[in-house]
Length: 303
Ligand SMILES: [Zn+2]
Ligand SMILES: [Zn+2]
Image (cartoon, rainbow, N blue to C red):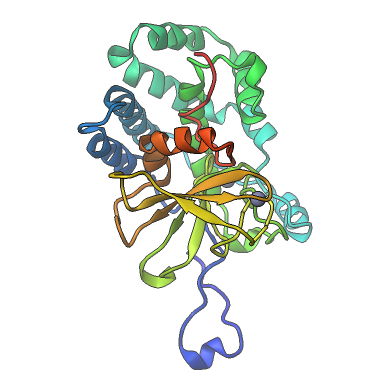
């Protein structure tokens, strides 16, 4: 990991500044599977949480199977950095066949335990050629809800996440320009799944967690990450639910993003705890708020 550049004043104080961006250093998928298994106990969505846990275990294996990702060229990185544009382009990622081996592994790893509709989706995906897979991935990454095969989406998303993490891990933080607005991932342009308030070296700082590549970027607290409003920000939780999970609502744009307090539960995981706290989404939907976070394993609409 590169060392953050010290600013004048911080050298004297002896405290290195917290990084504005953290790239995914290793596979988060095994720990996520474990977290989902733990959350599944006594949960109304236990079967689904265990199914996603199995997907995450397959993602962990696929992460190890993929060769090291090839980052964009030095010229592309330089151009993106100067213009503070995400160096990883989701459209390119969808067309890149390098994620196909991850999909193949994930499909074979989970097919035995998949329910009938998911097994049919696995068979559909297994029969697609490279251009058809690129079209499916492109639709998913563009959030094209109309033409989405919802039963197939979790498998494709799982494979794209594995490759997205591999690509982001191949970058250097210094390759990434800091954009003025921080609503989307500075590395790949995807929405966050949720934010978390860190402990340890970044104690008390909020980082948003990318839904696709797993990069984390710092956004100050008590501020809507979607529209940057700082007035009337409120926090909702679920009675008798985890004290570590809240939803931060914004009355200016009527959106919300979940926030995890790692001090209250160090094992909390943005994707897993977002899925397990769906009761909070139902509550906020009733209040007229829209999710600004994206969870590829929680795509609304008929399946
Ligand atoms: Zn990203
Ligand atoms: Zn807002």
